[in-house]
Image (cartoon, rainbow, N blue to C red; front, side, top):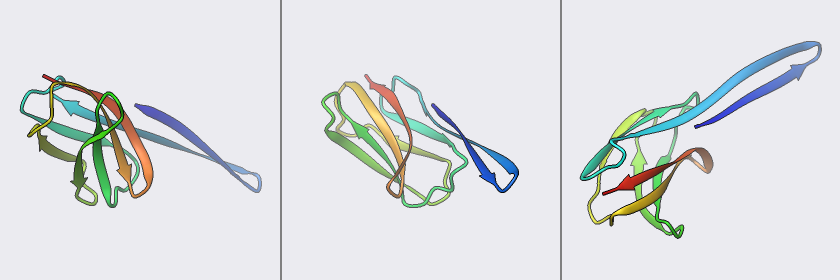
Length: 102
């Protein structure tokens, strides 16, 4: 989970925005399928959930419906092992995490 605080100063006023992004994949470790829950203040557009294997090769990509905060995906041909996932909205990286597939 990545937490950021953005502070904007305009004239003599200070505004603080809390930008918290996280992705929860369950079950983790996964066997046949997994559900993904997105917690983000960002309005997701053209979002992609991408899995990378241990050497950084892209192994799977799931396109997320605009504005969606939950979705599921199937293991299909993914091998057992550890993966890194990244959630992108457009070209912006929103969140990252780890997933084990058994």
